Image (cartoon, rainbow, N blue to C red; front, side, top):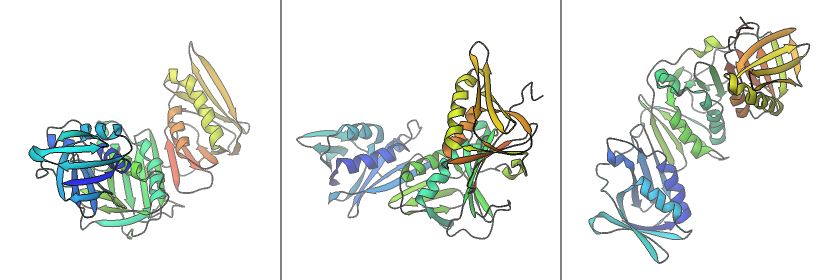
Length: 379
């Protein structure tokens, strides 16, 4: 195997696949990146047995072939190379010479024979969605997944297909994430989704890598293919495959409030900034922040003994009942506000210990539900 390529091209490809390589494993071979040189260029692949990625980079191929190179060492080398053309040549005893300017590295390689090839998801359901739309859906849901392995199914995002039975929901594809304390749901219309209802749970880490590929892209479509045990994402020359989490996702529709007592509409930026100020004080008292709607205005209050307190009154349009008071973990509120990109946002509240609902003011199929905190005042 022998090829030449630009350092920028090489750096982009290696840095993307390197993130998937397993750093600790009982199978050392998966700590490598597979290089395959053919007339079409260089194909880089990584596989940690939970998920894998493959992509193409442009190169001048002198001799076709394949080789495994240690990901961590290669990533360190490539990131430090000058911005010049880089040459790779496989020599005797599996030594790969990486040459640049008048200098070179010699790197030990492995034969590719035992490297686990990426599975192709066949005979599965497929659909397509604009890359920027899919990236937005991931951003608006993934932060709500659980980090606890005890709630294994909640460490993934539910991808749900088919017509929704929720009022006002015209989507045929929805993404839902929850950690038991909050829930984020985003719906869209996707091409190729059948009439029947189905769903799968995709690990959050896989969607994080998909987002890394798609973020900032404003053209092209993502093709998603779902098999019995795996799901794949294809965007241009990039292919990502992941296992599916097996298990039963909670019936999220049960926690969506059917109505609200009070609806408070505010500027998203103003609400976020006020919530972040409240969070400074609330951080010393389990992030508990009281939301009080009274006399046509909303007040955020937090108090930490021996630190101080805050009472922040926001400009808002209040519709509905006269008065409501409820406490939330303010960090769960700020997470949602950071994910909403509309100018205004609506907060819907009910009396007692009912969940709060945050929605973009202009509608759209995004919904965020946050559970309240029981306090002495609430009791």
